[in-house]
Amino acid sequence: YSINQAGSRLRDYARWLDENNDLTIGALDTLVNNIVGQGIGIEPQVSNRRGEPVERVNTRIRELWQQWQRNPDITGELSIQELQRLVCRTWLRDGEVFAEHIQGPVRANRNRVVPYCIRAMEPDWCPFEKNDTKERIIHGIQKDADGVPVAYHFVDDLGDPRYFRYSMVQTRTVPAERISHLKFSRRRNQTRGVSLLHGVHRH
Image (cartoon, rainbow, N blue to C red; front, top):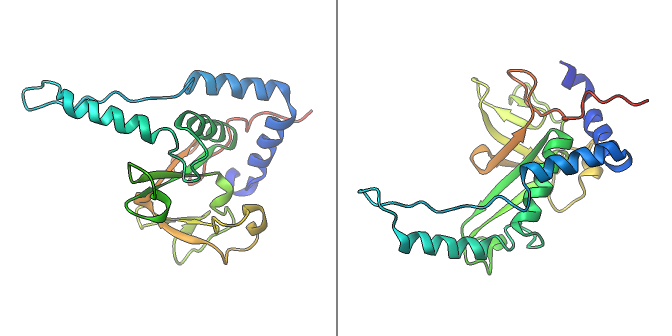
């Protein structure tokens, strides 16, 4: 109920703190450093039926990872380390963050050795104001009768989300299996995340 009442105001206040309060900036910097550091990598562990590492396969996976991690973001501007740090900070500050997994031979993956990239999206892209009881859409997230997300509604990714805050005309629907939604929840059936800074008061 409190999240419904607060809407996006908690997120806006948390962002104000991240821009204007030195203690908040330092705290978020420290958390990101401790969680992500210089980047979270992988170590392939493919084994055969006897439990022995298949070095040829693992070596190839490492090679592909090294190439892919240079620009996994859909824009091609961020390395995996930069993307992880930005996503982590958004998650901590805003309370949630979305990622769309884009696979296959589509325009976004042209010139990529591995046909896969990530579109990271701040909470603004999923309109908090988009609700439809008939379609079971709650704060931009569509659920089935059991409360399981089946689709997410995002504003037009070619525009600036600030201009679509009160207009849901430009939303696009993305199946839930293509979306990762990382959020801080304080209640069992909470649909949207709440900022880690929700308890900080303005003096």
